[in-house]
Image (cartoon, rainbow, N blue to C red):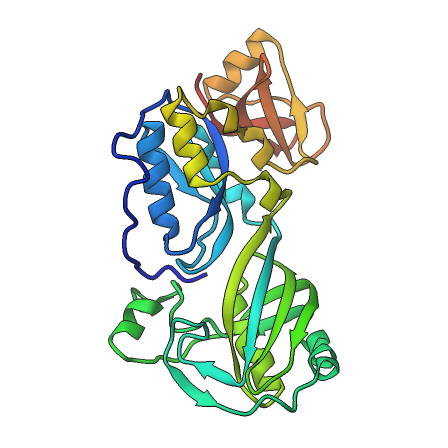
Length: 313
């Protein structure tokens, strides 16, 4: 998703409470008008700790699920790249914009009143499965040392290489015909998918143009909207003594099929000192726990588990 700058939102409260440090993650319901960086900055202040990061950018105008990692959990973000993403998007047919969403300037208009719900549903299979997308100019993709959105701010356009993404599921949940027709799409896709580009390309396939009018992320991996907490609720919990009860264990970010390994004191000492231990459990990766706490990520090398990441207490 794109990462352009937006107006920084005002503080939720005049006096924000600083709680004890945490090592885990929060499932935030990002509000419209906030960048993902704004959310991270707010959580950083509320938590009173510097090591805070998110697992995948949401556009400022978009809302929904944003995983925010704290402390040691920031070192696990790379393992969440395989999480599927789920979105509910509103596709506006008959209006094409230069940003492929509602924030851009209109570059083309057409009468979409001839587009039917059946016609829309007929083109959706073309965009299901593995497809290729050209990153939009407002995206954060690098081009010769610059982000594309930085180039776009100068009014310039450059050639971009298409890249593969996977649309696992796409359904039209609603359709409202008209000169500017609107469709509600539920999409499950791989990370790195541009929903705005998906909407643009569907509009092109229907020969009337289109753009993404509204976007809400409804899920990231196993986590969905009902699991999420608002920033207001987070700030209220912090002001009342801390939001520790809202912090999920960092182990939940890791694939459930990974082996769980708990060793002796000698094994724990070896792992914490960066040394390998014999691998008895199957698999290429494992989570090493000490007294129920995630203490390391292990990578198999031959018949040994070697620590890939170690988390001191």
